[in-house]
Image 1 (cartoon, helix red, strand yellow):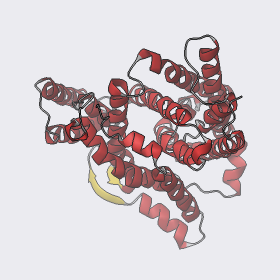
Image 2: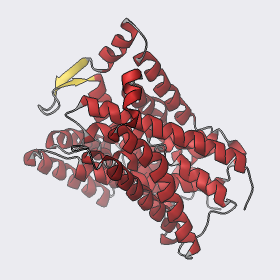
Image 3: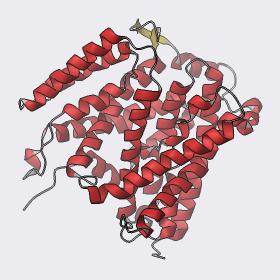
Image 4: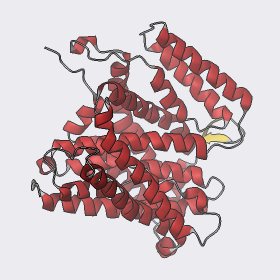
Amino acid sequence: MFTRPPSALRDFLTGEAGGGVLLMAAAAAAMVLANMPGDVGHLYHALVHAEIGPELTPKLGPMTVHLWINDGLMAIFFLLVGLEIKRELADGELSSWRRRRLPFIAAAAGMIVPAGVYLAVTAAKPGLSGGWAVPAATDIAFAIGVMALLGSRVPASLKLMLTAIAIVDDMGAVAIIAMAYTQGINMAALVAALAILLLMIGLNRYGVRLLWPYLLGFFALWYFVLLSGVHATVAGVLTAMTVPIKERAESLEEVGPLHRLEQAVHPWSAYLIVPLFGFVNAGVLLNAEALGNLLTPLPLGVAAGLFFGKQVGIFSGIWLAVRSGFAERPSGASWTQIYGTALLCGIGFTMSLFIGALAFPHSSALVEQAKIGIIAGSLLSAIAGYGLLRIAGRRTV
């Protein structure tokens, strides 16, 4: 009998989603430390921005703790994202067009509507249009972490739907990062990166199943993508697309390179890299001035995009797709539960923080304002989604 190979993604869904809970704890710790009086708050910011490495490119300057995590370790996170995208497209929940319909429609609407809400709110303030993509992303770890707290109150079909939507959402986010937030292209470095990528594709075509050549290629690709001006994390997704996958293995011992790499990377990503990212990026000053800025266009646009835009876009996309007969409603899930899941998709923490830093690279003040909006919108979405799903229980109306 066929036995499905192990999946880090499915393990994450069926377990306690500890990575999401750890991310919440790391983000909370960062906010507490950043707002501590005296030397403690200064020490947190000094640690985050401490210079600990060489200058890899004049564009970034000397490497700091913040840069190594955001541009270095997060490339490994994006490698995992890419592996999961490839796995689900080839041998998972997105392996057929019938299965892809609902998450693709929901994710597309869930990116377009929040961007539109953001642009509408910030239209009167010049210089903010570049942040349109900040509320367009969903944080899968955070959202699944909140959903995991509900246990059996949420049917498995909704967990899979949320994951599929988040994966498609990640595809869009990667495309946005590569195309909308790339400046000052270094053509020589870009050509070198392309040559490495073609070499890795060739390794796959010639049947190389050892992982180490692809890992060496990943680090080389990361370096040249960094030098090229395209954000270095894109190298993770590109590498994942070249790693061979063995579909429908006959036993757990026969899984291919992609499955092995996914299993190896997932714990490091979920329990170290993503929490570290949350820790160094969530340390927002929540003083009277910052809270007063919450109703200014940038944070208000981000928060409104995440809280209102996501729920409206995703729920309306699902409702229209199901009512028109284009896609099937998740089995065992009520419309109330689907709406609660759409609310959870407004948790955009990790990806939104990441895109926020790229959207306003020359203004730390705007980045901080975006963070306030991200935290507010994500918190509202988490509380509202959790509350509604808890009340909805297992009703099917």
